[in-house]
Length: 173
Image (tube, rainbow, N blue to C red; front, side):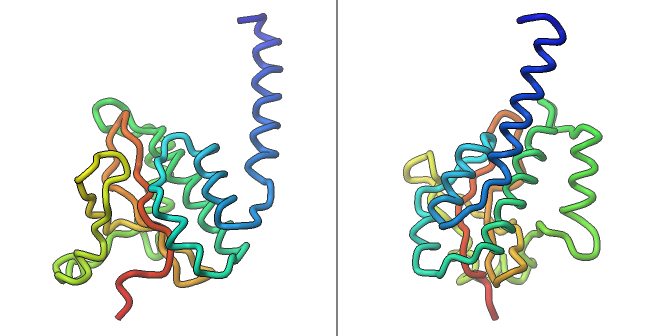
């Protein structure tokens, strides 16, 4: 550690560099996933996501929407304490993005979760634990297209949120 001024200057430099990195345009699905892996350290991305995205034309607005969802999830996970409680910032993020009239993140309706076909479609191979599956009905909405981002929920302190799917809405009627 240096002096307080050096620490503050170092922090400012890191924030400026991070801001530049976070605002860099994304030009492909591969670049989006690479960015997420680099910048959202509390999230763990399934290797199969790119296979789902690859057949779809890259849409910069959809990538920006995904990036926003990833940033929110990453920040939210950082607000959890060992006992599962949230900080004031966590409460703010939860109120702003997970509940209310038109939240960015929602659970599937019970009818979809109880539907055998949809339940199977919302179950993904665990990205880390070989042979295990994750049921991931919780998702982020990508408004620029009928895409969804499915992830493990509820989050647990000290464990990543697993991003298991980014692609077309699974439970279309």
